[in-house]
Image (cartoon, rainbow, N blue to C red; front, side, top):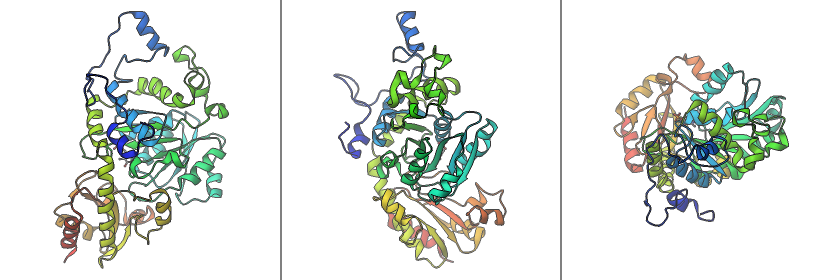
Length: 426
Ligand SMILES: *Cc1c(COP(=O)(O)O)cnc(C)c1O
């Protein structure tokens, strides 16, 4: 499977049925698993044998799908979580603890921004936000002795900035910490951050991976490349004995390729239980089977819509890294040669009233908080997700009142453009 193209991996990686076994991934709808002896079960609890005992920690259906996503990203191991939020929480909290510090791009999903700046702060973890355009010098200046991770999004939701993954990875590694990249918007079909030096990759599988707006989920993928032992003083959780498992040391026992995900499963899943259900994992896998077919269409529609809006007199500006006028065009050429995603954002003349009127007139695009699925949808942050902010605060956050986030689905691009055209008419 290793040598197959991403297209074939989308369809077949992660699960290979034996003779007479189900062709489709079986949904193992069982909380628990049966053993013949207490000794057999004891070995699982000591992490001396691998196997399943309770679906709060691990379930075969979820593991098949996680293995597929690990193969797609070029990682060594992965685990599914019940949401994108829990995936990012796990990725960070697996190596950060009270007293740790994170360097994060300021251009990230609002939920992740809150997670890092409010909830992790309550746990004693501090953060320095840096602009995604920060120079190496600016990035270096953000590090502290207690920095344990760098975080960014390949294409940020909703700002649509593109992360210079190689630069962020280089600086993170110079400071002996891993780079964690949320790759939700491009998906591994359009970008594989590990190939550019990222150490851990996360996703809200809720978005394109499921792709049908059907089921929430997340995933954490480990590249297996980060040398934890070389920085053992920074990562005691991986490099010193875990008393809750009879003193095993994750890196020593499981090696660099498996230590991060094993610790994530055996500590964080055990204690927080943010497990994806086997039903959800099954639905996610149906989405993954067509991810490589769907992403090019999302990109084709995104590009066509961005070009149409760019030339429209009622549009102030368009954010889409596939437009030559976009500030992230050059980075996108490097990291996203086949295009990024189907999400476009643009500012309408006339502020929030113009945006609300325009959206009311759209027939194909539904008003939703969601993005990145088969059906086109849109949102005006100023009157929804960011409605508590004043016009001045919106401007400071880089979200003008007339901004519309428009997520191109899989419909025909000519129909989407005709719909936009009629909604922009007086
Ligand atoms: C939606 C999203 C999340 C959060 O995912 P949920 O499944 O809603 O918890 C995290 N990161 C990005 C980039 C997202 O778009």
